[in-house]
Each structure stands twice: as C-alpha cells, then as structure tokens.
Image (cartoon, rainbow, N blue to C red):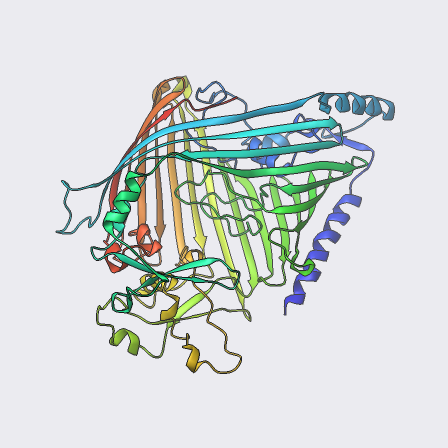
Length: 595
C-alpha cells in the first residue's frame, strides 16, 4: 500500500519542472523585498521567508533582544504585508548580459571571506519557583509550596567559513550548564521509596522499569531502590556540569549557480505552525507548546534545492540513524507563490515508518497573516493503547495501583489525517506605545483519542514505566512459537493524546514606551477539557539585565493531559497525580546578548 508515495514524490518533481520551464529565462524580477537576502547563493528560502515575515507568518519572540541587548525597534521595516511584494507594475525587466556578468562578479567578491567568521550568543538566568498541587481542593495548602532554585548559563558558538563564492561551511555548538536544585526530586519519590528493575533492550541499552511493592525482592541484584533520602542527597551533591552539543554542522555548495546542495546537520523548516506543526515530519524534535520559539534539532541530511523565479523545489535524503542503505529516508517538496499566497506540497518515505504527504498554505487577509498545514499518512508511527479483555491483573492488585490493564498495538493499514489552521496579527502603536502581537491556532490530531475511556492516559503513563503489565505480554514459559513482545509505549506516545487542541498568545512589548512587557500563553486540550494558562511580566532593568515574573496554572480532571503534566513521567506512582497545579516563578536574566 505504501507504493503510492513514489508517484507523489515524482509528481512533486514534475510540478517543479513544469513551473521552471514556464518562466522566461531572460527576465529578472526587481523590486523584490528579499533582494538583499538573495545575494547569498546559500540563503535558505525558508529562512529568508521566516526572517522577512511574509509567506511565513514570521513569528518572533516578543521579548527578543538585539545584539546590543536592547529591545527591537518597532519602527524597523517589516514585510508582513504580502501585497507590498506585488504592488508594482514593473515586476520584470530585460537585462543586459554583460551587465549581469559584471554584477555576478561583484557578488562573488562580496561572498568570499579571507578568514573564518566567529560569533554566538550567551544567556544567564537565575530562576526560582514555588509550586502548589491540589489546586481547587481541600488539600491545597498555600503555606507549603515545593520550592526550587535553578541558576543556569548557556551559550551558542558558531563559525562561518566562505573560502569560495560557491562553497560555505557552517557549524554551531551549544553549551549548557546547570547547578542547584532544579526540581524537588524527593517530592516525586513515595515514602516507601521507588524500586527499579534494570535490564537490557534489543539494542543493548540499559532499561529501568518501576517495580510494584509486592514484587520488590531485596536479594535481586538487578533491582535498585531509590528513597527520598537518596534523592535529597543527590540534590545536595549537585554540582555544575557542562553539556556540549552539535546543533548545526553542514557544507553548502552549488552546480553552475542553478542547483544548490547542503550536506550535514541542520534544522529543516517544512511546517509553518506556531504551537503545533503536523507537516513538520523531518526534524528530530517537535514544538514545545510551552516554549514555541525554542530552537529544535534537525536531522543529518543531504538537500538539493532548485530555485526558479520566486518558487523552490527541494529533494532531501535523510541519513539520520541509518544503519543500512535501505533505511535512508526520501522527501521532496515544492513551494510556489500565486498572488499573495504561498503553497507548499511534499512527500516523505522511509521503509519502517508510515509514508506521509504534506501540504501548507500561508497568506494575508487584511492585517492578519493566515496559515494552514495538513499531513496524510498511510498508517501511524504511534503506539496505541486500549483496555485489555482480561482485567484480572487489575482486580487482583492488592495495592490498587493498577486500575486498568492495557494492550498496546500499532496501526499500519488505514489512513490518518491531521491538520492545523491559525492566524497572527502584529501592530505597532502610535507614539511609541509599544507593539502588540496576537496568535491563535487550532489543531486537529487525527492520531489522538476521543476520550471515550476515562483514565486511559493515566493507565498509558503507568504502562510506559511498567512494560510487564501489558495485557499482551506473556511469561517466557507461556510464549508460543514466533511470539513477539507487544510494542513498547514511550513518552512520545503520551503527548497530544486528544483529538482537538487550541492555543493562543497575547504579547504587548514595550508597554507605553516603557521597559515593561507582558504576554499570556494559553493551551487547551478540548477533548478532555484540560489546559494551562501562563501570564508573564518582563521588565528590563538595564542593558543585559532583566527580570520576569510569571504564573503557570493548570486545570482539568485528575489524569487529564494538562492537569498535571509532571505525572506523565511516571515518577512517584499514583501519588504523582495530584490534580490541578499552580506555580509562581521569578527569573532574572543576566548578561544575555549576542557577539
């Protein structure tokens, strides 16, 4: 059934070629607001669009600072109005070949660098928080919060080498360090301690599975018990550690200034959603809805890019975690502009994953940027769960921790569809009264659950930590010939558990020309009616020092997705599900800036 993906890949390439040959090879587009960016033959059109704020809605961090540590200038030129790209009557004009050749030479000289450019950014933060559980219940105690203090520093360092006009090497390293009591680990451990059974998976990695109290065996060398005292001692012994990661590392080159190549590790911008992006099927990490602008990790890949006019065609060969040649993934995408609207269509195939077709669209309606994207797949990469027919293990559980026995299973023989639509609005007030940004987005998750079975998410979270409780798991003595263990449920299978989601953000930057800014982020799962609201005030005391005060309040029934997200980690057993929560934070940013 997966063969349908090959024609879709071919259609993308044919459509790209058809659009190319439809253009006049002797014309040049002028009055292009992206003209300066196109001086760089290696500039990714996705990145150009993102920076310009045109075809992509151009979401930005409302509290971002420039290299001098100052707030962005609201009077700076932006290209949020799509119509400004196409309001000229002289979009094309004939050019002289000799002048074009001379211009090309000057551009080449501009691109070549004698040395290697270095730069980066630094961030330092002191964060404190006060967390309360059991909100809206009689167990809520305002005098007994869980407190945490987290000092941290991080930095990104990059190098950019351009020894030739058609060759570039770029790399970026991330450095992070943290010390102190970043979370109260002891509070996540039950009074009797938490016992883990160690083992080894098929890849030789060590696994840890939580053990029920009745199964604890002090003489078993593969069992390890962590007590509250152990957690407190670990917290007390915490020292500063340095973590180094490769965020980007790639080489750019081209063939005859017509076909551009990139090989290495870099972020690939396929989707255009802010809180959710179902069309982003290539990157290794998804969007964090609580921090949508956080940098994400891209795969190791080989990209071929063919620009034609203001349109683009791409072919990707994804080589991340490839052990055999046939494990290589293929993806293609074409982007084209009609009027003030940009369309995108793509396809993805890897033999062990569900094949996907994606589509994106972005445009403007009045002062609003509007975007949408969707993905259709044959089968799903998600591990699903359902109540097992045999519930005897739960009925016989003396501790009553196992309330629902689940079977895990996969689906590979039917279609799935997910989509999202959203809008954003940006407005700079007169008289330097600041700038306002509004963002709203709806997400339909075709791989989610309808919430027909109460407690399913809580049971799935427990199953992810206790694989032996799977209703399809059999003891070695009972396993028939050709028996296979049921698919394992991991943390990724617990996120976006519902069908319908919505997110919104309001940000007012530089309120009435002051150093005060405000934002509110709200996320809700409409399927189980849980969610979170996070208002934040930020004040810039001086260059390179600012403070922010915020609150994070969750709502929903016990066991819902957003009611108590920490409980999804499975730590602390049933005691971790404490209903709605509220936390207050005070953060001080010190020394942050670019160099």
